[in-house]
Length: 248
Image (cartoon, helix red, strand yellow):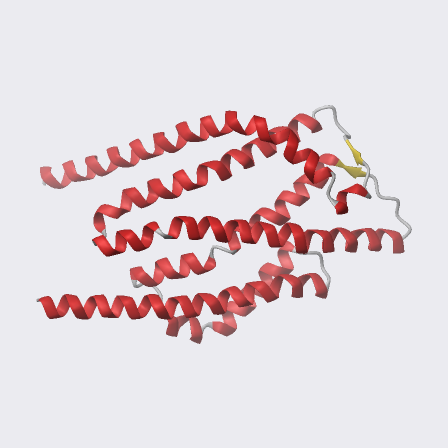
């Protein structure tokens, strides 16, 4: 009983140590992010879709609020590789050597997909949404006065979720390796998955069909890629189980 309790304490101590590492790195990244915030904000204001808009601060605290929001987001992005590595290092002792190497490769893949999602949302979806809103305001005879706080909050709320949504293949691969899902389950639940993706597309985009289609198409492709990846991972799981049974 004592050995088991000691084991639990050791795991909690290990978890605490890794959380401290992440928090310390986040603090350092937060300080470093102050060197990037101003160039990033100025770059975003010079983008084509922002040039036609006049940014206004409706409150005295709006500029510092935007400044700190971007500092936090940049620090979070800089900390993401460390966070993912610490998660891997915490669970890796319970994995086989080959599984450790495979799961370690998830970290760069996850970061790559995150930036792909952010890039798609910013360079494809966001300009379309801005033009849609401008045209709608023009048709309704509304003179838009854009608050810089509202503009950048809308930008972050639209762009960052796509970085998370594009993690779908990695999540599916990981869950398949754990045996929690199978490619057969994903194929069978395709109709429900598409319905869920359509709901997500409707929630994070303006209420027009074109915006929802622009979001739905890449999400559907990602889901199909996830099924294909799940098949590969599932075959590897079965092969590992067969090899393990043969050794016994």
